[in-house]
Image 1 (cartoon, rainbow, N blue to C red):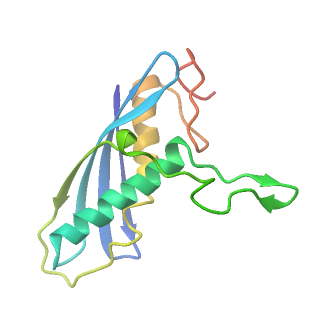
Image 2: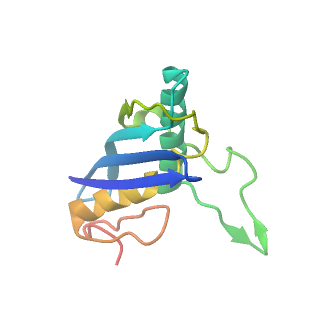
Image 3: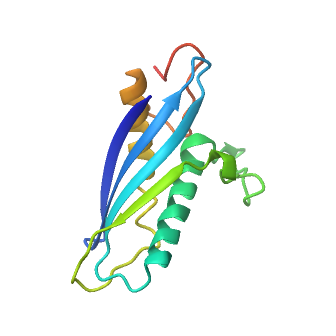
Length: 149
């Protein structure tokens, strides 16, 4: 079990930080148990919209971390849609806790900012749990090794 943090200041405006909590199994399995987010995106007009963007960004980011992969064969990308680049399933989604920082600044964007810090937060948590640094995505922990070499 481990915890990792990562943050992002997107386009100089939206500030977002995650704490990821992961568990790892002896068989090399990884489970992201919880993601805690703090976000400052200026005055929030629609808190539910901010939460939805963050939850969607976490789902999309985790899809890249734990399974999504773009492969090239004969000079062409093999994936063409979400049929062959799957998004995580509901049972893989961690518990998500969101804290919106009160602000008086003008509203900023929430579409893309939630995605970039997901992978570093999760891979830092894996390092905290296993002592092994992850250098490639998607994450593939070899069985009994506890991480990539």
